[in-house]
Length: 166
Image (cartoon, rainbow, N blue to C red; front, side, top):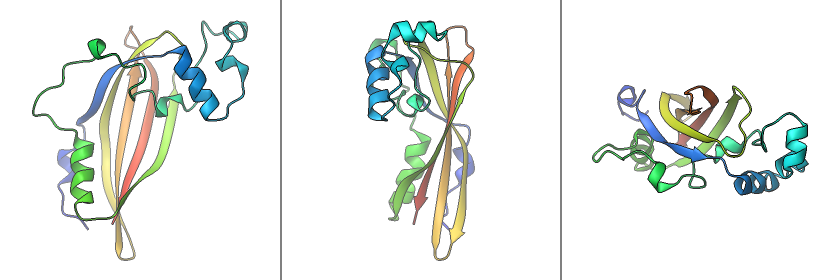
């Protein structure tokens, strides 16, 4: 097993920012995952189905915190000298070789999210653990990202599990 003090990383922030849910991005994402539902392309259909705007597809938040919809002037200041704990752990593990895999992804919608919303996101390291498999070690890094709306209510929670296999 790799000798890293994983406890020092648990609870640390991996990311934070503001994400604007945009129609073009939602529509393009739905097309990319081959979702043919017109609800992601037609505002009238979305409204007739009870939404206030076009909703996000179920797995949209896999990519929501990436560059689309994140405008520089809306983002929090990045503290100098503060590193990303996920990068630290994976960097240390990759220095010994092996590969990184996306293990699983979970989405919990606390309510529908629609085009036009601005959500604040914050990712946290929830857990890091290792499992032995023969002569190999798998290290799992669990990241939970919470998206809150302007009233600070949680809209979506995602849990991502990255793993390093040596």
